[in-house]
Image (tube, rainbow, N blue to C red; front, side, top):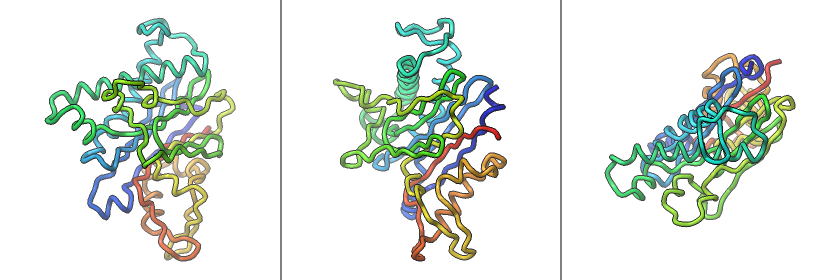
Length: 278
């Protein structure tokens, strides 16, 4: 039973620069866990968009739901759905699953924007640009995947995604606006492994990059606030569903660096962390 094997926690905070500018948190996250699967996705809205938090808030749950639906209904490599679910062979079949799921989620979002004011390009640019980093854990294997920038850590080893030229990551919704190759706007599988070898996995938006190798202390108590590893090493984040958000808030608000300068989470920061039960 997947729930008996892995614990999940997550949280999100607005970045210092967004708070100072009076802007919303443009990150979002979602996860689903049942007896067979654990699925998690974090999304980061484009900072140039007027209301990019909309795309992230829609994208994260839509993607998780699309992946779950395809896992339950089955995936046929000829493009048909409703087949009898069969064990998938990674990575090729999982790539097909993720490709279908992303296209399903984008199609649903495109349907939603049909009644919105503005041209398709204007609506996408102002509301629906987001990046995504995700993980799928199944009995037959685990896959981390992404489109755009961010970070993921598997068994304590972190990998950064990006940055991209001119700070312009590939936003999936641009696949609807291009007449050419849509491949750059689709999910890329970053790593796969047998699930029995997985101890922990953490996915984050690019704001979480500030936590890599961070030496942060509380400005008044001197307490070590730590870096990103605490979120899969410390049991308290899995006991309290709001603890990840609380800790990120404290780090960004009260943290200082070794030289005494304030430590800031300048960008919106979102994490979902998953760990094997001990």
